[in-house]
Length: 186
Image (cartoon, rainbow, N blue to C red; front, side, top):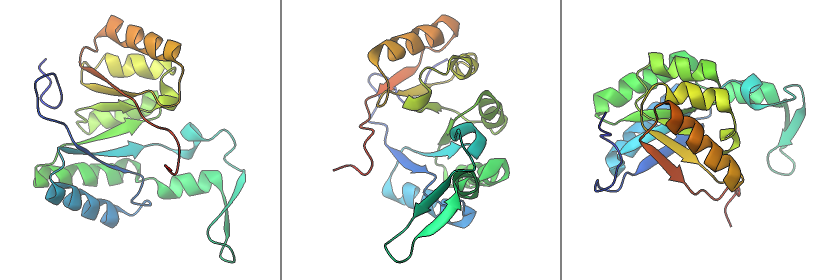
């Protein structure tokens, strides 16, 4: 299958990283997609997760905010609040289609891969924290779609194993991303 998005000889593929910056607000997400289109992005990327997929201790309390205005919240509740969920993502995918803007997601579970596939997700982005999550890599590779694999938080041997795992199944359109995983960036 020919990769219509990124490949040698194709123009630079510019992705508007929306991630979870919509704060769980579908209206803000849709406006962000519109801004990405106006800015000339090649595509937009979101994240698809639940707190239980991302956080070992969902009941841990986290304090955040400015001095004197700190908010305390359970980490699990915060992550779930900041997620769009499958219904919100379906709305985002539909809106992006009306804009003529390709949209794709980073999943964080095998179930998430299946949910994204049901939405017609055209590209799979793997977070560097999941480069050694072999069952998810295998699920993605079986789809035969383009994959972007982040490498910012993992050792080179994990990257090599991920490439070997995915290519052994089907993934041929595999882009490695060298990401600086330092937040906020200096």
